[in-house]
Image (cartoon, rainbow, N blue to C red; front, side):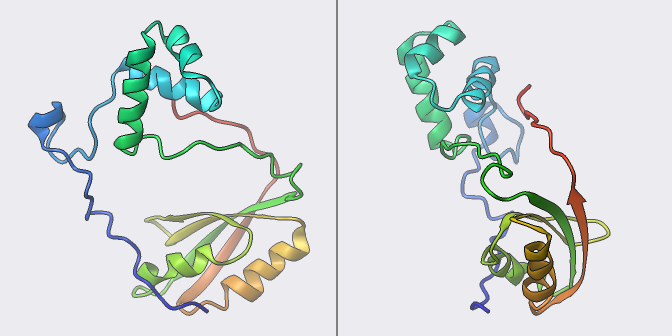
Length: 177
């Protein structure tokens, strides 16, 4: 098991802007996006390898404007990087599951680092409700999934219970559509 580190405080956001600086409401953490920004994000979500020239043409803006907007979206942390979307099944990870984890009240802050170190954990989310943490786990097979849940996850200090939901099929979505 690793040395425990505390989970970053979601209220300690260093990217906050004053309301008057960007015209947004008080407490908003980033500048508001306009229609061109949202269209740019949608285009880049569909094809992250799109050249800036082609992006500018699709959005009917100048290349200079496209470059400036892209730089701003990256500087503000709206765009956090570029990468490939991987089909888990074709990559040898044919078994996927959501795992709901209930933890002892005092351990949720230290658990995030430990969860990220477990092989095959694809996504960690702290949630409110009937359980405390939602994991997306992708493994090669059911035997490996069983080992992740029973041997690795339930062995962590602070885990009170887990509940596993197998994923039969996934459909792509878009937050920008």
